Image 1: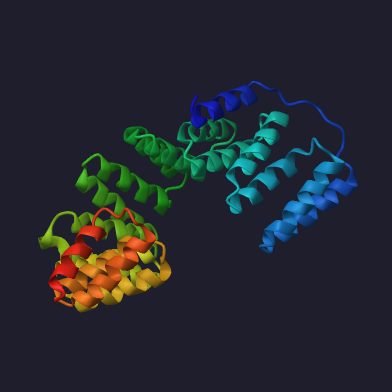
Image 2 (image 1 turned 90 degrees about the vertical axis):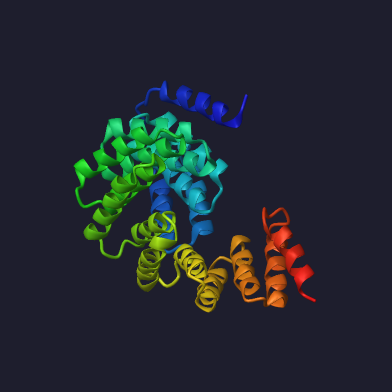
Amino acid sequence: MSYTKLLTATLLMILCVAAFSRAAVPPEAVALKDEGNKLYNKGKLDSAVEKFKKALEIDSTYTFVYNNLGVVLYDKEDYTGSAENLEKAISLDNTYEKAFNNLGNTYFAMGAYENARVCYERSLELRPETQKHINLGNALYALGDFDGAVEAYKKAIELDGNSAEACNNIGVALQKKGDIEGARENYVRATKINSRYTQAYVNLGTLHYDQGRGDIKKAIEYYDRAVKIDSENSLALYNLGLAYSVMGEYGKATTQLRKANKLSPDDADIPYAIGLTFAARKNYRNAIRNYEAALKIDPQHMYAGEALAIAKKNDK
């Protein structure tokens, strides 16, 4: 049985457990919970974990603490620990809508998208919210149900017509379905709702980039807009660099790609792209250096090895 199916079985079992009445929480546990919350808000995650665990030592049925501990462990990228605590929270209270949503986020991070879908739907049954519909749409998108994702995002917009994220995500799903005009309309709508929503500008840029050289100038405009809003958006910088390369403006391309590389040093595609800009100018020495950097990050990179061999052959 796969891990995802095992998680689903566990989740369904939890859904069948009814909440039970409980005695008042000891004041010592409440105080520790409050201290943990304060530490979490200050970004002191390890200290928050310690306080929450001490609270559970006093009261092992303190539902809210299991939820809060799950959230902290999620932020620490301990998804297994996060899931265990959030599962405990909903086993104690199967109407705890926030815990279901948080568990959905944890499952999503783990790649258990079907589990995430179940959690988001249960949370929505208990209390509809805009972000929950968006979360459900994201899970459905990850599962390949693009029509279902669009419907979920539309429900988010029904609750909040000013959700730039929901509009942007509709655009992503429609683009995946091949509805280019529908995607463009929704990306534009997202930027009208929030003129600083960088992801929509990046997506508009990519929409034009994918249409071929004739639309590259328009793609550059959108990528550049995203970078001006957020100068540390490595994806926008990377895409802007690629677009400049297509236009033959290799100096500008290298500049943007190097900025992206500083922000995302573990992305092998970036030094590979930098290498291409040098190879295009017959500067094979620098091309080799960047291809080697890409291969150091990812020895199995799909193109860097072949590009390196060609550059070495030409560097004579």
